Length: 196
Image (cartoon, rainbow, N blue to C red; front, top):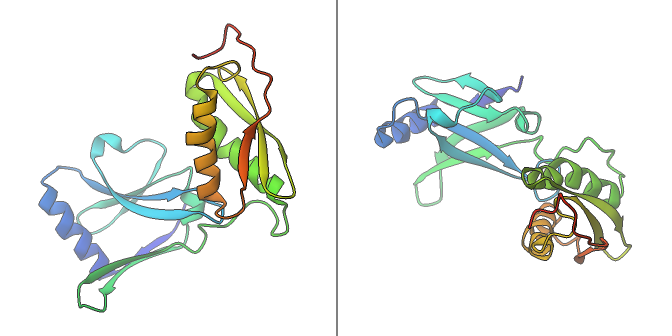
């Protein structure tokens, strides 16, 4: 289970903004986008009780709860939330997540290995809802990522949109400045599994 630290002032701030929402059982959700990559980001959201799942870790605070999806909890372990003031004297909530960019790969892992892990853990599961998947074929020395679609994505008329608006965007966010382009090297053939 993750450990998080929330200062008294931050807890008071959260309780104040939650009470203004007038929603019973409203929690605070800590999130991580692109964890384990150079483009990782953390966030804080309201979480209505109907969106709290069995896959969430729960942290009881004074008068409210903080939840974290267990899929990102290792990246948010050791997080510190505090409330201070900005230069204008306004409240400034800070969220320090020291493990956010921690990767299970060694520090000297190649870009190809890092991209392969990201595709396996983040990109491909997002396509699974359509019966599709994608795998890494190669990463060139100049940062061109080559992918192959599988399953429902094989022969799909939306594969180009998925590539440009989905996969390329995700990779550019996760690996800022490292990806020159993303190209599809799949020999597309419509099958019974093809999504569209």
